[in-house]
View 1 (cartoon, rainbow, N blue to C red):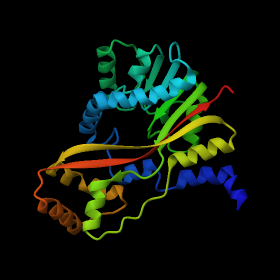
View 2: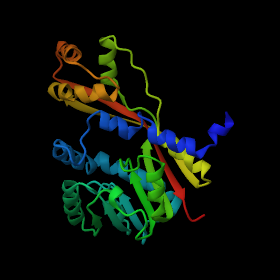
View 3: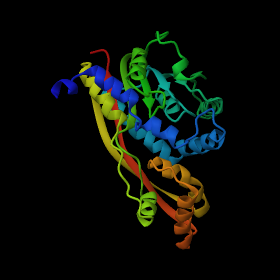
Length: 286
């Protein structure tokens, strides 16, 4: 059995084929991609959340963890993969880094340009998918940064990202299933057994880094947040929430869930969501 634990090819293939990794579950849940019709609304909300006080505190917390290990971002060249509207690109630039941001969405790219101007920083922007960038590095960066990035789907993608880095590679990923406590309440009320999904992108990444002999530091944390949501917002989210839990809800099941919510007579709900998140900083110049 030990030979399987240390067989790199088996782990690479398992990560590639696992149907329950975060990205595959996101796609199954019907979450918007930059090419989907519902993306504009999502992008606007994401941008607002990213630059809220809570969003900025989250970015600062993650950057502080990295900065404690790299000493300073001043003068660093950083490649931000999946930069969105600049939630990390902008504070990196504010700390004196030379930032190149990769973002496939035209809408998020426009937001990034506007946010960079608002915060008086300069950022080089590549409006294209990371997958479309040539495998052979055209530039080397001190730090390649990929926070919850849907482009890092397997070991091949992780290796490609690392090939652009001279010193460090940072990645954060889900380290366990997401949790939605209201959804779990609904499932319990409907008599549906909720079987947790045991899969983790971070587990695959860390094990393969170990097998390849990389030096790295990692941290697994549990984070939760509470969001106030109106009843109609929750009802509109039910199909996605069911799919998040691996359930293809038919009209009858949806009607029962909606009835359960309406019978409560609440107009607004406090929705607690969370999960375990992993982050790793790989040292590439050791």
